Image (cartoon, rainbow, N blue to C red):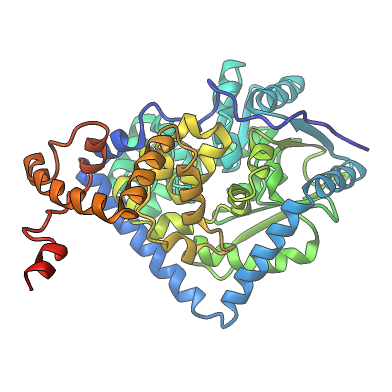
Length: 475
């Protein structure tokens, strides 16, 4: 059995949520002006960091687990075609149907056709980054099918006609007062006396979703892991909504990025320890749902697995950048990133925000379509230290910066600087000329293009009144 998706291509334009309408600097400037957003983010990320740090400290072999997870992901990427073929064989043997989607357009068409074939006009959804990436909700709505997000945070985003701003907690930018207003405005049948007490808000969402769970016959999910050895799919979550979606409907359609495959069942021993501690600060996920194909009389009787490329094989072709495909979507890098904490997820313009989004999104779309994202970082390295599978995000950021459209200009400037420093007389002349930089103003605002782009976000160092060479001569 063989499947050919064609030559590696990038995620197509005009569909999905990988490209923003603004550059990161422009969007970040707007976000920094929202004081409520910054308070919400600071509170949430600080809380998650604290919980995560405590449960990670309980494991004496945490670093060994990280190394094991990294090695497993590297093995998977090196053997991806074989493992995907094995996964397809096992899923098919268990009664499922496997579909291959080269890009977002193909994936959306496959899913909408499958739903239309059932005759249903509504689907329930498990939280899924892959379906957000390809814009599946918009495709379903265009086909006259209503998607209902059942994860509480995703439901808040959907009802608020908003966009997710965090991988794990999509509504992290909202506080409970804002959530109450969204529910009162957009949730059918909600009590007008609804308060902003978190248990009360959760109860309102539960009542709203309960009937939808019981009456909807088609569900769409993502997958945290797909096990090549057995054909088993796994979804981990904290609320139980996923379990309802994965067991009650007649038809289940799972959209899984091809990088989510793992070789063997035993590999989950590593990832199911790493993921909850790094993401939610829990020792284990409250709900871990696994299924293999179709079981007569138990759960969905029609199962479809859509394997999504959408730029992933192009990422795989980059020996440095392919590390980004190791990501297990824990969001640990977001929670420690000083840039994300101040700007929030919307500034990145992609469904994948934060440090991992700054390296994954440009590779899926092509760097020219997300040229500012590799610069959305201070290169402090906190993301590398926090990543449970040791993705060297700072190195990938530098690698992608070298591919940016203006990288040639930077390279030319650096080459000129190197040449100057390598020639003593020229260097001495440059030092004397540097004194003229005072005319550029306190922060170098007066520098001409393209140098003004550098000084717009950095203080231009003030040249000394006397160079070391001049001082030495005087001694």
